[in-house]
Image 1 (tube, rainbow, N blue to C red):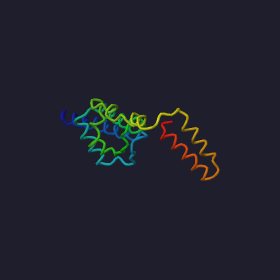
Image 2 (cartoon, helix red, strand yellow; image 1 turned 90 degrees about the horizontal axis):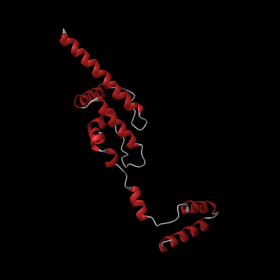
Image 3 (cartoon, rainbow, N blue to C red; image 1 turned 120 degrees about the horizontal axis):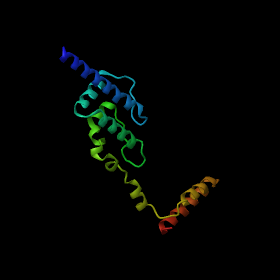
Image 4 (cartoon, helix red, strand yellow; image 1 turned 30 degrees about the vertical axis):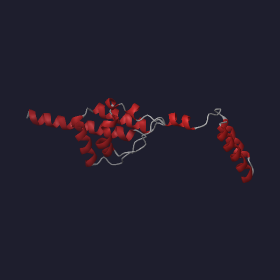
Length: 153
């Protein structure tokens, strides 16, 4: 009888952890939410929980959702929970340093390729462009700006 009781308790614990993972996934606004907690999803979560602690899985989901919604990171692919657990879990565990690995380098390259101008020059130019009444006036402004850029100004 003890064996049956332990098996039942183990299944109940696993079931609670499985539901916790699924609810946490759906709770994150950046992740793809699922309406149905299907048997396929339960099996996938249960399989992962055999190798990883529930807290590790929740932290990986947190890291994934944070990076997915961050403008400072280049990861933009949105997975289903099954795909995440199969293909992405290990990439977003703390040991994998996801915040460093997926940090966007766009800011670095953007400053190298854009001409150096005062910070609000683009805003000023946009305002001028909006105020230009005709297409000819807008073309003239664009040509002036292009010449300024070619000269390095």
